[in-house]
Length: 593
Image (cartoon, rainbow, N blue to C red; front, side, top):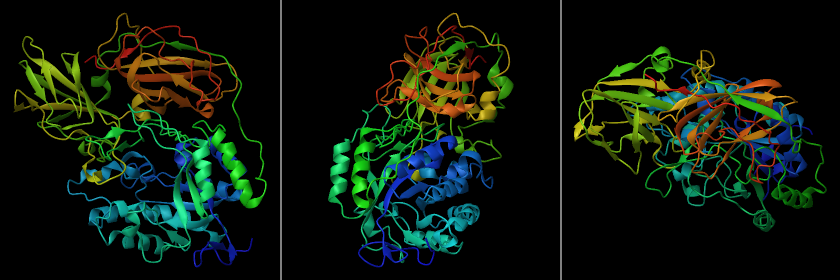
């Protein structure tokens, strides 16, 4: 195709090179899909009859610490754009800086919140300075991949859903200029709900014509403790047939919120509820990239617009393989926290983001352990200053949980000075709504015992980064002869005797924690569901021994049942499951201080 005139919106329909063009788009986020599967997912998109890929850009992953930028490996955006172009897919890029996406803090980096006066998504100078610094790095990588430069990008979105926020009338013009001044020349557009359309547009963006549904929801996200959401294939197809406009399926393939990247919802709720790890979304391609009934029905629909859909051979469900799994953990591993974590001493509690760690960028994700001495029994009151959930221990004995609902606990009587420990978990920052500026985690204020604020804390950051977890790969692990009453690390050997394939890990009877495979964080697990398995991409495994680590907060009555099982998978999770054998039950007591 000649490159004379890119995507235009000057009439009742889009045009590309002056010819009518209907956008049949679908969202696949490169940061939610293992890089080894990018091509597989995009080929399946094209085979379904779609012509346009849309993707967000997560600022918090590309700049996890201020001034430290990452655009390599899993975050190689340029490689993703080149791949899309080579497969004949156009691209609509949604670079943010805010993306929502059910992603922690809507993709904004947590170090922004170190500023107590921060006003996110406004022209507050410290926010715009940070945006300019990020865009200086990002946009120069995007510009060569625009349509006018021979690349696949035909449009760029200006921020995201700002009409639902709309706190600063100068903000959207600032973002628009930030894109244009750095060389963005393709069509600009915005995305808002019906009410947001009144406030979220920018001069020069697409007006009310041509019509396009930027997020045509193929399903919905899940929250911990809620039911799994399903949007039937027939309903999706029926609604699409009613639309005489361009669409973007949100999402065509969801993937996974690996690590601690899932956000939280606060819309219409008294307290935030965190998102699950899976971003399956009941999408046309499952979390593991398998075809669904929705995929096949959509393929038939899209064939009506441009004839028979392009057919390719793609990865499908794999045959069952056999592996063995054995758990073996250290013999006496003395005072692990004291050995590997430098403590911070503080008279008052300090929230995660303001801890002097990670080159003074604070702690973004994971857990923070707060400890102080007490000499009496009584009532512990959180004053609603725990974000988001704390396990409470007195002299290493579990007392209870404090969260948004439960803000008081009775502490038992005891002799002399005792250590009060609060293991505080960041369950995910809100990703949408008007409370973004309030998403600091850990202890965000005073905790009281018998109406007197506690003081003189020892604080330790448990961010669960690879470097942190790898400190537990060596040493002497020990067998547990009784059920532990404190958070612990478990370690396993997963032996794969054939070429690795996708699988899922199921943890029946285990309460809450996070699982690592060969140092990669698979995400959070919580027995309250609805998610009951964690996706394990085949490319993250290798033949022979694989290391599995599980950080478990608390245990249920099934402690002596195998924690690592891939049996009894939901039919929705249709990829291969390894047969596993549980050999030995051992663990590292994480809080043996």
